[in-house]
Length: 329
Image 1 (spheres, rainbow, N blue to C red):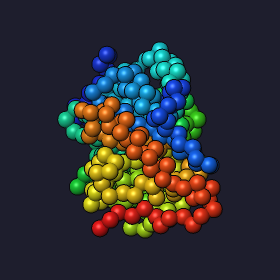
Image 2: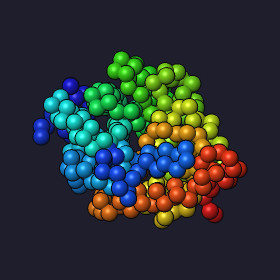
Image 3: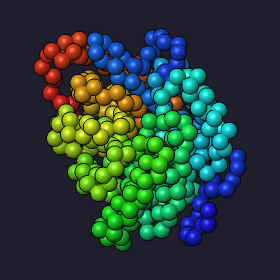
Image 4: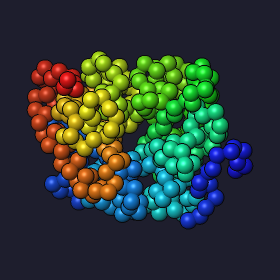
Protein backbone atom coordinates (compact mmCIF):
# COMPACT_ATOMS: atom_id res chain seq x y z
CA UNK A 1 0.00 0.00 0.00
CA UNK A 2 1.49 3.34 -1.00
CA UNK A 3 1.87 5.83 1.82
CA UNK A 4 0.91 9.26 0.56
CA UNK A 5 0.78 11.07 3.87
CA UNK A 6 3.33 12.94 5.94
CA UNK A 7 2.58 11.27 9.31
CA UNK A 8 4.43 8.13 10.37
CA UNK A 9 2.67 4.79 10.06
CA UNK A 10 3.52 1.69 12.06
CA UNK A 11 3.17 -2.00 11.37
CA UNK A 12 2.07 -1.76 7.77
CA UNK A 13 4.96 -3.92 6.64
CA UNK A 14 6.74 -5.23 9.75
CA UNK A 15 6.38 -8.97 10.33
CA UNK A 16 6.42 -10.25 13.28
CA UNK A 17 -15.65 -19.34 24.66
CA UNK A 18 -17.46 -19.57 27.25
CA UNK A 19 -15.32 -22.51 28.11
CA UNK A 20 -16.91 -25.94 28.16
CA UNK A 21 -15.86 -25.98 31.81
CA UNK A 22 -19.14 -24.57 33.16
CA UNK A 23 -18.56 -23.69 36.82
CA UNK A 24 -19.06 -20.95 39.38
CA UNK A 25 -18.10 -18.28 36.87
CA UNK A 26 -20.64 -19.06 34.21
CA UNK A 27 -21.16 -16.04 32.01
CA UNK A 28 -24.42 -16.73 30.25
CA UNK A 29 -26.75 -16.19 33.16
CA UNK A 30 -29.97 -18.12 32.88
CA UNK A 31 -32.89 -17.64 35.24
CA UNK A 32 -36.34 -18.27 33.88
CA UNK A 33 -36.16 -16.82 30.39
CA UNK A 34 -33.02 -14.76 30.94
CA UNK A 35 -29.95 -15.57 28.87
CA UNK A 36 -27.45 -12.71 28.83
CA UNK A 37 -24.02 -13.55 27.42
CA UNK A 38 -20.95 -11.66 28.63
CA UNK A 39 -17.65 -11.17 26.84
CA UNK A 40 -14.39 -9.36 27.61
CA UNK A 41 -12.50 -6.90 25.44
CA UNK A 42 -8.87 -7.80 24.74
CA UNK A 43 -7.93 -4.12 25.04
CA UNK A 44 -7.96 -4.94 28.76
CA UNK A 45 -5.25 -7.56 28.16
CA UNK A 46 -2.75 -5.33 26.37
CA UNK A 47 0.25 -6.96 28.08
CA UNK A 48 -0.76 -10.56 27.34
CA UNK A 49 -0.23 -12.69 24.29
CA UNK A 50 -3.58 -13.09 22.56
CA UNK A 51 -3.69 -16.84 23.09
CA UNK A 52 -3.07 -16.42 26.82
CA UNK A 53 -5.71 -13.70 27.06
CA UNK A 54 -8.30 -15.91 25.39
CA UNK A 55 -7.52 -18.79 27.72
CA UNK A 56 -7.94 -16.56 30.77
CA UNK A 57 -11.16 -15.04 29.45
CA UNK A 58 -12.62 -18.50 28.89
CA UNK A 59 -11.42 -19.78 32.25
CA UNK A 60 -13.13 -16.84 33.97
CA UNK A 61 -16.39 -18.04 32.46
CA UNK A 62 -17.03 -15.57 29.65
CA UNK A 63 -18.99 -16.69 26.61
CA UNK A 64 -17.28 -14.37 24.18
CA UNK A 65 -14.48 -11.99 23.38
CA UNK A 66 -14.33 -8.53 21.85
CA UNK A 67 -11.09 -8.82 19.88
CA UNK A 68 -9.41 -5.44 19.50
CA UNK A 69 -7.08 -5.69 16.50
CA UNK A 70 -3.79 -4.22 17.65
CA UNK A 71 -0.03 -4.35 17.24
CA UNK A 72 0.34 -7.75 18.92
CA UNK A 73 -3.27 -8.93 18.88
CA UNK A 74 -4.11 -10.10 15.38
CA UNK A 75 -2.51 -7.16 13.61
CA UNK A 76 -4.52 -6.83 10.38
CA UNK A 77 -1.48 -5.63 8.43
CA UNK A 78 0.71 -8.63 9.26
CA UNK A 79 -1.61 -11.53 10.11
CA UNK A 80 -1.47 -14.49 7.74
CA UNK A 81 -4.30 -16.85 6.71
CA UNK A 82 -2.69 -19.65 8.72
CA UNK A 83 -2.71 -17.41 11.81
CA UNK A 84 -6.41 -16.76 11.40
CA UNK A 85 -7.10 -20.45 10.92
CA UNK A 86 -5.32 -21.25 14.18
CA UNK A 87 -7.14 -18.44 15.94
CA UNK A 88 -10.51 -19.70 14.72
CA UNK A 89 -9.64 -23.17 15.99
CA UNK A 90 -8.75 -21.76 19.40
CA UNK A 91 -11.99 -19.78 19.59
CA UNK A 92 -13.89 -22.95 18.73
CA UNK A 93 -11.98 -24.96 21.32
CA UNK A 94 -12.74 -22.38 24.02
CA UNK A 95 -16.32 -21.97 22.78
CA UNK A 96 -15.93 -18.21 22.58
CA UNK A 97 -18.17 -16.07 20.44
CA UNK A 98 -16.31 -13.13 18.93
CA UNK A 99 -16.81 -9.58 17.74
CA UNK A 100 -14.08 -7.47 16.13
CA UNK A 101 -13.14 -4.12 17.68
CA UNK A 102 -11.12 -1.43 15.90
CA UNK A 103 -10.25 1.02 18.69
CA UNK A 104 -6.51 0.31 18.89
CA UNK A 105 -4.73 3.45 20.08
CA UNK A 106 -1.45 3.47 18.14
CA UNK A 107 -1.77 0.81 15.47
CA UNK A 108 -1.85 3.27 12.55
CA UNK A 109 0.33 6.00 13.99
CA UNK A 110 2.83 5.39 16.81
CA UNK A 111 2.73 9.02 17.96
CA UNK A 112 -0.88 10.04 17.62
CA UNK A 113 -3.72 8.16 19.29
CA UNK A 114 -6.55 6.94 17.04
CA UNK A 115 -5.07 8.65 13.98
CA UNK A 116 -5.99 8.81 11.20
CA UNK A 117 -9.77 8.42 11.35
CA UNK A 118 -12.61 8.55 8.85
CA UNK A 119 -12.85 12.32 9.45
CA UNK A 120 -9.15 13.22 9.38
CA UNK A 121 -7.89 15.75 6.86
CA UNK A 122 -5.13 13.28 5.96
CA UNK A 123 -5.00 9.52 5.91
CA UNK A 124 -8.67 8.59 5.70
CA UNK A 125 -7.87 5.86 3.19
CA UNK A 126 -5.47 4.32 5.70
CA UNK A 127 -8.28 4.09 8.25
CA UNK A 128 -10.66 2.73 5.64
CA UNK A 129 -8.13 0.08 4.60
CA UNK A 130 -7.76 -0.91 8.25
CA UNK A 131 -11.53 -1.24 8.58
CA UNK A 132 -11.78 -3.27 5.37
CA UNK A 133 -9.16 -5.65 6.71
CA UNK A 134 -11.10 -5.84 9.97
CA UNK A 135 -14.15 -6.91 7.96
CA UNK A 136 -12.06 -9.56 6.18
CA UNK A 137 -10.80 -10.89 9.52
CA UNK A 138 -14.35 -10.92 10.86
CA UNK A 139 -15.43 -13.04 7.90
CA UNK A 140 -12.58 -15.50 8.47
CA UNK A 141 -13.27 -15.76 12.21
CA UNK A 142 -17.07 -15.93 11.80
CA UNK A 143 -17.35 -12.85 14.00
CA UNK A 144 -20.74 -11.42 14.83
CA UNK A 145 -19.84 -7.85 13.83
CA UNK A 146 -17.12 -5.24 13.35
CA UNK A 147 -17.35 -2.30 15.73
CA UNK A 148 -15.97 1.13 14.79
CA UNK A 149 -16.54 4.87 15.36
CA UNK A 150 -16.28 8.20 13.55
CA UNK A 151 -13.19 9.86 15.00
CA UNK A 152 -12.71 13.45 16.17
CA UNK A 153 -12.57 16.20 13.53
CA UNK A 154 -9.59 18.52 13.52
CA UNK A 155 -10.43 22.09 14.62
CA UNK A 156 -9.84 23.57 11.17
CA UNK A 157 -12.15 21.08 9.42
CA UNK A 158 -15.71 22.39 8.90
CA UNK A 159 -18.34 20.12 10.43
CA UNK A 160 -20.16 19.63 7.13
CA UNK A 161 -16.90 18.45 5.54
CA UNK A 162 -16.28 15.96 8.34
CA UNK A 163 -19.79 14.60 7.94
CA UNK A 164 -19.30 14.23 4.20
CA UNK A 165 -16.08 12.26 4.74
CA UNK A 166 -17.73 10.08 7.36
CA UNK A 167 -20.76 9.23 5.26
CA UNK A 168 -18.55 8.45 2.25
CA UNK A 169 -16.33 6.16 4.29
CA UNK A 170 -19.27 4.37 5.91
CA UNK A 171 -20.93 3.79 2.56
CA UNK A 172 -17.75 2.28 1.14
CA UNK A 173 -17.25 0.11 4.21
CA UNK A 174 -20.87 -1.06 4.16
CA UNK A 175 -20.43 -2.20 0.56
CA UNK A 176 -17.37 -4.22 1.50
CA UNK A 177 -19.16 -5.68 4.51
CA UNK A 178 -22.05 -6.72 2.28
CA UNK A 179 -19.68 -8.51 -0.09
CA UNK A 180 -18.07 -10.37 2.82
CA UNK A 181 -21.31 -11.11 4.66
CA UNK A 182 -20.24 -9.19 7.76
CA UNK A 183 -22.29 -7.01 10.09
CA UNK A 184 -21.09 -3.51 11.03
CA UNK A 185 -21.80 -1.95 14.43
CA UNK A 186 -21.15 1.79 14.74
CA UNK A 187 -20.34 3.16 18.19
CA UNK A 188 -21.15 6.64 19.43
CA UNK A 189 -18.13 7.96 21.31
CA UNK A 190 -17.86 11.04 23.57
CA UNK A 191 -15.87 13.90 22.02
CA UNK A 192 -16.05 12.39 18.53
CA UNK A 193 -18.09 13.67 15.59
CA UNK A 194 -20.87 11.18 16.32
CA UNK A 195 -21.04 11.36 20.09
CA UNK A 196 -24.69 10.66 20.87
CA UNK A 197 -27.70 8.74 19.65
CA UNK A 198 -29.28 11.72 17.87
CA UNK A 199 -26.22 12.05 15.65
CA UNK A 200 -26.18 8.30 15.06
CA UNK A 201 -29.78 8.59 13.84
CA UNK A 202 -28.64 11.26 11.36
CA UNK A 203 -25.84 9.01 10.14
CA UNK A 204 -28.12 6.00 9.84
CA UNK A 205 -30.45 7.94 7.54
CA UNK A 206 -27.54 8.18 5.09
CA UNK A 207 -26.34 4.59 5.56
CA UNK A 208 -29.41 2.53 4.79
CA UNK A 209 -27.60 -0.78 4.37
CA UNK A 210 -28.95 -3.59 6.54
CA UNK A 211 -25.30 -4.35 7.34
CA UNK A 212 -24.98 -1.05 9.25
CA UNK A 213 -25.98 -1.50 12.89
CA UNK A 214 -25.07 -0.12 16.29
CA UNK A 215 -22.62 -0.78 19.10
CA UNK A 216 -24.15 0.56 22.31
CA UNK A 217 -21.64 1.45 25.01
CA UNK A 218 -23.59 1.57 28.27
CA UNK A 219 -21.23 4.07 29.89
CA UNK A 220 -21.29 6.35 26.86
CA UNK A 221 -25.09 6.36 26.88
CA UNK A 222 -25.11 7.64 30.44
CA UNK A 223 -22.51 10.26 29.54
CA UNK A 224 -24.34 11.70 26.54
CA UNK A 225 -28.06 11.00 26.96
CA UNK A 226 -30.60 12.51 29.34
CA UNK A 227 -33.69 10.35 28.78
CA UNK A 228 -34.17 7.02 30.64
CA UNK A 229 -31.99 4.12 29.50
CA UNK A 230 -35.01 1.92 28.81
CA UNK A 231 -36.27 4.50 26.33
CA UNK A 232 -32.88 4.89 24.64
CA UNK A 233 -32.45 1.15 24.30
CA UNK A 234 -35.97 0.50 23.09
CA UNK A 235 -35.71 3.07 20.33
CA UNK A 236 -32.60 1.42 18.86
CA UNK A 237 -33.10 -2.21 19.89
CA UNK A 238 -33.49 -3.52 16.35
CA UNK A 239 -30.11 -2.04 15.35
CA UNK A 240 -27.98 -3.09 18.32
CA UNK A 241 -25.43 -5.77 17.40
CA UNK A 242 -22.85 -5.28 20.16
CA UNK A 243 -22.77 -3.87 23.70
CA UNK A 244 -19.92 -2.49 25.79
CA UNK A 245 -20.36 -2.34 29.55
CA UNK A 246 -18.40 -0.59 32.31
CA UNK A 247 -19.07 1.78 35.20
CA UNK A 248 -18.83 5.58 35.07
CA UNK A 249 -18.94 8.50 37.47
CA UNK A 250 -19.99 12.12 36.93
CA UNK A 251 -20.79 11.46 33.26
CA UNK A 252 -17.10 11.04 32.42
CA UNK A 253 -16.27 8.13 30.06
CA UNK A 254 -13.41 6.81 32.19
CA UNK A 255 -14.35 3.09 31.95
CA UNK A 256 -14.33 2.35 35.67
CA UNK A 257 -14.41 -1.05 37.32
CA UNK A 258 -17.91 -2.14 38.32
CA UNK A 259 -18.90 -0.67 41.67
CA UNK A 260 -16.52 2.29 41.36
CA UNK A 261 -19.08 4.43 39.54
CA UNK A 262 -22.74 5.32 39.76
CA UNK A 263 -24.62 2.99 37.42
CA UNK A 264 -27.46 0.69 38.48
CA UNK A 265 -26.48 -2.51 36.71
CA UNK A 266 -29.43 -4.54 37.95
CA UNK A 267 -31.77 -2.10 36.21
CA UNK A 268 -29.55 -1.96 33.11
CA UNK A 269 -29.37 -5.73 32.75
CA UNK A 270 -33.12 -5.98 33.32
CA UNK A 271 -33.65 -3.69 30.31
CA UNK A 272 -31.41 -5.86 28.14
CA UNK A 273 -33.16 -8.99 29.29
CA UNK A 274 -36.67 -7.57 28.88
CA UNK A 275 -35.79 -6.65 25.30
CA UNK A 276 -34.40 -10.17 24.69
CA UNK A 277 -30.97 -8.93 23.67
CA UNK A 278 -28.96 -11.97 22.55
CA UNK A 279 -25.68 -10.43 21.39
CA UNK A 280 -22.53 -10.19 23.46
CA UNK A 281 -22.29 -7.80 26.40
CA UNK A 282 -18.57 -7.03 26.43
CA UNK A 283 -16.74 -5.73 29.48
CA UNK A 284 -14.48 -2.88 28.36
CA UNK A 285 -11.82 -1.89 30.91
CA UNK A 286 -8.78 -0.87 28.81
CA UNK A 287 -7.08 0.93 31.69
CA UNK A 288 -6.79 -2.22 33.77
CA UNK A 289 -4.39 -4.30 31.67
CA UNK A 290 -1.85 -4.26 34.50
CA UNK A 291 -4.27 -6.40 36.52
CA UNK A 292 -6.17 -8.00 33.67
CA UNK A 293 -6.89 -11.49 35.04
CA UNK A 294 -7.96 -10.16 38.43
CA UNK A 295 -10.29 -7.56 36.92
CA UNK A 296 -11.76 -9.98 34.37
CA UNK A 297 -12.70 -12.44 37.11
CA UNK A 298 -14.07 -9.76 39.44
CA UNK A 299 -16.14 -8.31 36.58
CA UNK A 300 -17.90 -11.55 35.72
CA UNK A 301 -18.59 -12.19 39.40
CA UNK A 302 -20.12 -8.71 39.71
CA UNK A 303 -22.27 -9.11 36.59
CA UNK A 304 -23.50 -12.57 37.58
CA UNK A 305 -24.40 -11.24 41.02
CA UNK A 306 -26.35 -8.39 39.40
CA UNK A 307 -28.21 -10.90 37.24
CA UNK A 308 -29.16 -12.88 40.32
CA UNK A 309 -30.89 -9.80 41.72
CA UNK A 310 -33.31 -9.73 38.80
CA UNK A 311 -36.33 -11.50 40.22
CA UNK A 312 -37.89 -14.43 38.34
CA UNK A 313 -41.11 -12.43 38.05
CA UNK A 314 -39.30 -9.59 36.34
CA UNK A 315 -37.44 -12.04 34.13
CA UNK A 316 -40.63 -13.61 32.81
CA UNK A 317 -42.22 -10.22 32.34
CA UNK A 318 -45.02 -10.67 34.89
CA UNK A 319 -44.01 -7.83 37.18
CA UNK A 320 -43.80 -4.12 36.60
CA UNK A 321 -40.30 -3.24 35.40
CA UNK A 322 -38.13 -1.16 37.65
CA UNK A 323 -37.43 2.46 36.70
CA UNK A 324 -34.71 2.86 34.13
CA UNK A 325 -31.18 2.93 35.44
CA UNK A 326 -30.09 6.41 36.40
CA UNK A 327 -26.91 8.07 37.50
CA UNK A 328 -27.14 9.41 41.01
CA UNK A 329 -26.57 13.12 41.28
